[in-house]
Length: 343
Image (tube, rainbow, N blue to C red; front, side, top):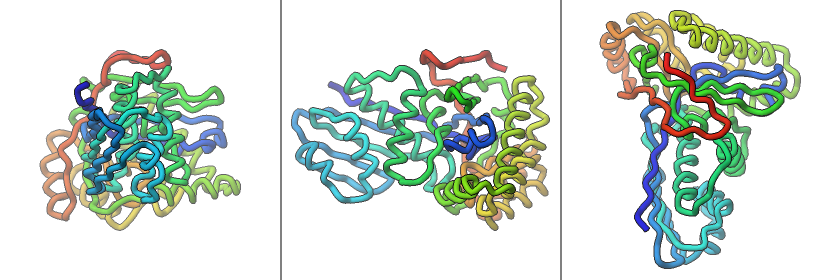
């Protein structure tokens, strides 16, 4: 059997981040999360072997682990292989293989890189072993549970959907579960107003999310109000996108920034504040913290004619402007997905 080669996109969250953590969205009566897949990819290559040997080659960790069989692999106490081991426990491969993985996402970039890599690995194993998921929701639920086991921190679900399906995702969290809508982005302003900048500092999503979760469970009124405000902003963004009122997005990004910092001051940082200041002065319309913030990447919303100037200012300040664009739906539909028309 030939090697199985998989790649999955990462994502930029546009609105409703943090609300995808269970049960935060239930505290505020449901929520909407909006994100878009981007061409910053994670890769998994699985090569079946004619022996019981198992090899994992992680380019990101600069780590190659070899085991004589599955039992030996599961006994490894190296914490760096825990995600790999969780996949072995789930799939229980009866034959040997070599799995090579890598990610284009900066470490701590806030782009959902680890979630995308988990999906890439799952796609590779599923393809090899003939495992079929009933829907994207089923696959995401498994990936979410595997990563929660590995990280031992509260984890959301929005990061997995773009890696599974691509495109612009509108995810609705309600009492019945999660509803997914996927949109093409070819003709939307996402294609020409999109600039991604890396601050050079890793984010710390686990810590930020834990503090939000703790404050919410303790019924802190300021935290719950900030979550409610994020919910409203996300709903307004959904309405703006679906009615092609993209000019509303800069103001909504600004509102989201303010509400997110109220949610937890650690969502911002000196690097983010400086980047916000210099890009707006150079003509950008708004910035959006990616992921749980504190560092990582920032979406800069900017008209095409001002992007060169904004990029120059960012690079002069020592920030990395990433050459990336949104990704259209990956093709194919699962039973519970709804691929809607392009804008």
